[in-house]
Length: 333
Ligand code: FE
Image (cartoon, rainbow, N blue to C red; front, side):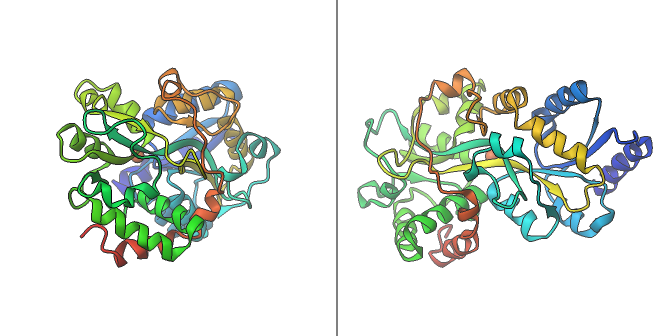
């Protein structure tokens, strides 16, 4: 796989359009970003060469060092964006356009990463066995009245680590530990499967409450085999009475090596703008990071909500503690 990817990049750099290209390493799938890159090329004439991989791109950047052909890295999850920053493979970008289009809570204060799309970490509850308003916050997940009713994926997954890190940021580590122990003791089963599997479990009567990223509702509702899972639950935007719903992002960073830095920043700015934001968010039922751009009709139909304004850079500071807490309370055990 790595060798094949290397060949792809080598052949594209052999073409080497003088000043006319930008190279992207992406964890995001081609169907999401290819159409948007095509729109960028149409508008600017700048070719976008992309290497897709499921893992190992940051390691590859570390190994390639300043000889890396990559200009940009695309990924999901604040943990991975922060991981690239901590690995020293990114550089700071200062752009008025990006600072205007991407709210401060969804970008690194030093410009090492910028959010492109948002996902809300939702609660979903069984239409049959729960009533509207029965649960309202992440904190409620630890309420003993929900014993045996909750399903989540592994606490070690980035989406859970970020949520736990945000609870630490808001309430401190001691309170977060108590909370996580409470959630664990309410689990219907030991964590297994991905976010969608938790909704499936509700549809099968295994549990009544799950914690999932918002776009999976869109994915399931538009999938013939999975729509019955999604239709068995209602969406709850947590913490509307206080800090707001925890958000995570997909995002991008300029690499330290960036041989085509100017083109890369042009692409970054394009992606934060109207057309790209609409395309990107709609492809995956996500929320545009740019507040001027409306989400898709389906996503809008879930209603408006207040999101947690705590900067994700602050959440990132607690991700190591959060991972340790998951082990300490043996959340997955
Ligand atoms: Fe996901």
